[in-house]
Image (cartoon, rainbow, N blue to C red):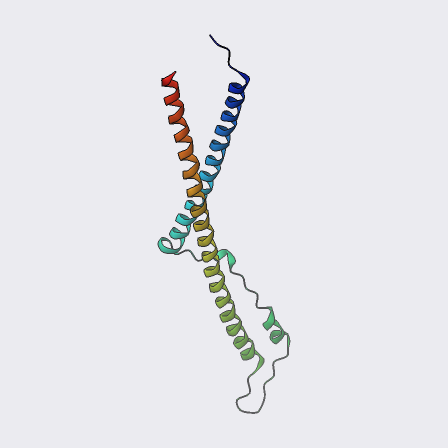
Length: 150
């Protein structure tokens, strides 16, 4: 039985390193693909099925109206003059409308960001995974054919 030459053992090492590389990259890209797909499914369920509004964002920062509470109430004798209580209510109404608009914008931007990240992960990872996996399959078939030929 002939001894394997040093060239054969070198080719075998390169082949093993190549196979490890292909499996490693294939695993990583498949995981990234799964994360992207899960993100897209999660976003779809949040928006279209369960209609979740991300309540954790809500807070009540109406500090800009607090100066109206601390001021003394002025009741004027002139008709049409508002007292400070009414001014505070008006300020609170305006502030609440501003905060609701900010919140709505934040939620839509958040959904758009999640959607773009999920799509990018799927579109980048899927072709990379398919390429590496097909290379692994092609190499496996070549090894089977070489094994039968010997």
